[in-house]
Image (tube, rainbow, N blue to C red; front, side, top):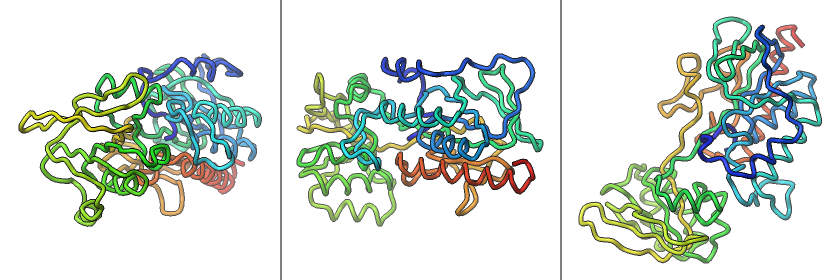
Length: 343
């Protein structure tokens, strides 16, 4: 999603290898460290910002966050990122981006930003509640995490790449010619269902209540797609399969009737949670917590504070769009510093 997405509960073993090579020690100084450019988050947006900022001689410092490398470290295969004709696993791709940022002398530190103070011309940030950093510019790339149902088999199969995902655009291609289930009732869910219907002979759409939350236009798109079967008042009771999804056990929450759906993929489209809680009261955000920025810019309402990636993007949420916005944020930061006579 890119970015600081999720919690350490979702980390997997291969992250140890991803994190071990070349990491500078965490700053333990008691006096505040001053940097030109601080990047919060280490997904595609953060690393792209770091590459551009480092090449512009901003000497960026990156704080990785609670999930170093972001959501892509929990993704098995990435086939839609330019430059990888044979595809690349999520952890491998993030390691590539990390190594590129290190090549240009980005300082990368493990840690979690726990507090900010944007009252003055110098932005104050605290890492792990103890290390204080002062920054002329801050690039926020903390991302957003997908919401899950929380079923044990759902999470287990998600973590082993066994057919549970939260991104139809990312992973729908792998299920071409197969039947799938999609859970959700909003605009994004309807959009993803119709996208999957172009690839899959049958899409079961599970709606927990008796009606959609989506706009009328999106509902009509679903209703006019013949290979989407909408099951209202229906929830996932269990996800079947040892190593990969081979069925979904659905239950009608009004009648209690259970039904096995013969599918090989489960798509969860019940929303995302942006990792922006610590910026409440400092930056403008919408009702869902996504950070607001200027049109055609990454600038927030605080001069010198910029946002990139899924922390501000509830529409696209792709690695490549996150990377592009990271580039924009670094360029905006460089130009802002130059205008202030600090670069």
